[in-house]
Image 1 (cartoon, rainbow over the protein chains, first blue to last red):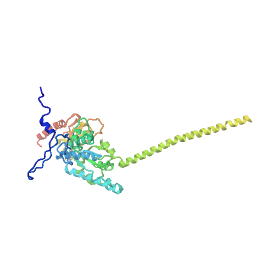
Image 2 (cartoon, rainbow over the protein chains, first blue to last red):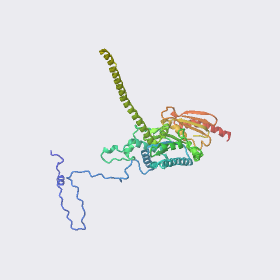
Image 3 (cartoon, rainbow over the protein chains, first blue to last red):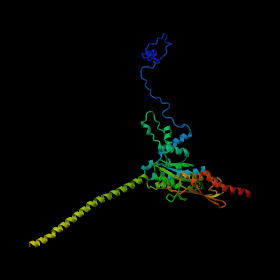
Image 4 (spheres, rainbow over the protein chains, first blue to last red):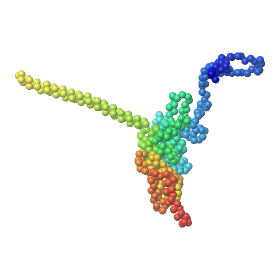
Length: 326
Length: 98
């Protein structure tokens, strides 16, 4: 029995050798611009992919225009750009009290700025008074942004083919952050009403000022009534009673209250630490030189002692022999 | 939470413990002018590695003291406990006709 399906139907045979017959047009006005048909005998090649979004607006996992998404993005950039973040809890602080706290903080920071300008002309670029401010945050969104910052690595998908989105609102970021097995150290702090103070650099000088205003302790005493009467305004004090320092995130590491105070207590900041290290290394170097020196010195002393000893021995027997010869 | 009858609130917690959430939420339930009206609020923060449970001490206007272990309580349970006595005081006050 012959096969029911013909292997070489006539239609296919015709298509295999396409005839490019010219289209005959009699009237120019009736001419239609025809694009040449896709030649069927050529292998199909995939066309370059068409981008379906403008390059400045890559697709995001959640609708990007809502406030939540924008806050999420903002918190991510805050977490990425500031190495030192203080976390506070605020309990029912009134607007006037907020105003007082913010004013006191700003004036204390301005003072540090002025002091820096007075002390050295070269340190003028490290003035942060205008960048350090209290920001009340949405706790849940901040916690989610923190997870994205900790667990999402934009460089990870570089090897994959196709286009890979690297921004923090992408689906990849969402999936990386929603891994339940990973835990952030700061997670227990992420509940209740929170406020953060972000520093653009780890600067103990400014941290000291902030701590002495917002959570005074024996190490960081609050300004005296005489020095700063505004600080002792009942409104400011009432606000500060409801403002609690919970912890800090310093260059990715988490510190509690004591740790934060320790960071604030580093004299002179990173430069001070460097100076300390240099002093320590110099001390170690001197010690090492001493040690190495002492070995050679002691060897010298030993050898010298031995030489003297030998000389004495040489001298000692000599008279005896002389006596014998005499 | 009925805070009218409280004279003193003492909270102790370790902020880095996930169980201290209710302790922190208790503080948020205190109204903003409570301190000005004579309520004493003390919050003590424990260091990060301490294993001490979070605790709440409350004193009422009639002198009754209450100590709660916040480690295993949710905030609704805490509020319930405190409100039980506060409601009693509220009823007494109402009967006296003030």
